[in-house]
Length: 244
Image (tube, rainbow, N blue to C red):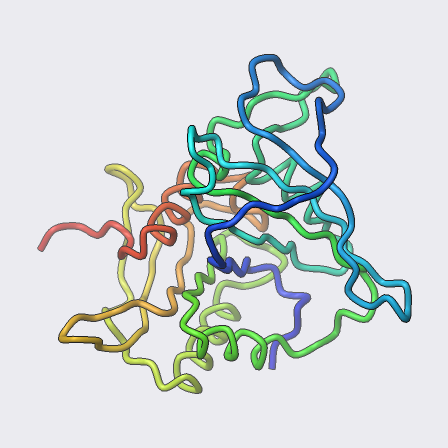
């Protein structure tokens, strides 16, 4: 059984919404001509025990951000920050340059979605994630699990095992064979989709993918491939595959 210490990223496509909070007028070292809004603050999860999650909300870089989906991002833990690592190294709108100033991330996921990294407490994280993910699947919310094939911390076989367990427990059909997907004209990795048939059509509920050449932090080491994964996930479409 897996715990939330594994590094494959769970993406949850939640709703079309915006998040209230404290408006960030400008981050230190932020480049000019930023058209999207940013917010930060705390959302209380357990008032009795004084527990809260820190969030950093970034609007989609779009003329109409409310028309774009909201993606909630958790980095695996313990010791891996959704804010410092996820938002400012992997898929956020900015990355830290050598001189400490922020640089625009050309592969930022807020080009297509509102982004909400949540920073949880990094203790007591040894929990079984499978029942939680299974409940999400049963609510009809699609899930993408992916791993870099050069990840030295979490083997891709572990993530694939989790995907197979989820598919079996949720009684999902295998929609395609495990095979290569493409990022442009290059092999981006390997993938397999699971789902169900609705009104005579296959509907994907769960996708497992590897990312060729990627390390533990996929959006950081392989940003183009990661963005292709994310776009396919948002659109509810299969990852690009070679024509038969």
